[in-house]
Length: 74
Image (tube, rainbow, N blue to C red; front, side, top):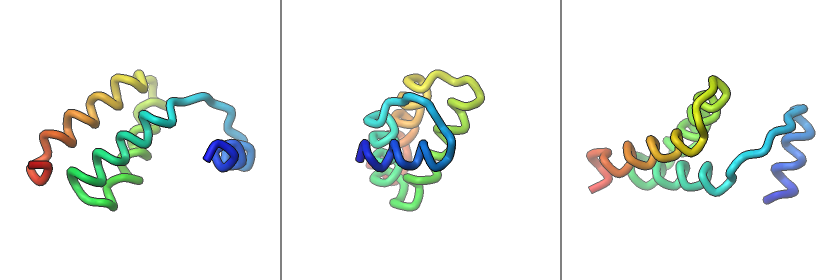
């Protein structure tokens, strides 16, 4: 997976470090609590929030809390 991430970053001209586990956890939470299709959209929105200055760890916690409280998560 690290090779894939490096290749995508190179292809897109992006040089940024990030917490892969936090992104994957957010995707998992959205996929399981909402629906599978929510995973990529959630991680995209996570990236937008971080790009706008949000703290990545805070964003991950917010997504986890929202997913756990989602009606279908019970």
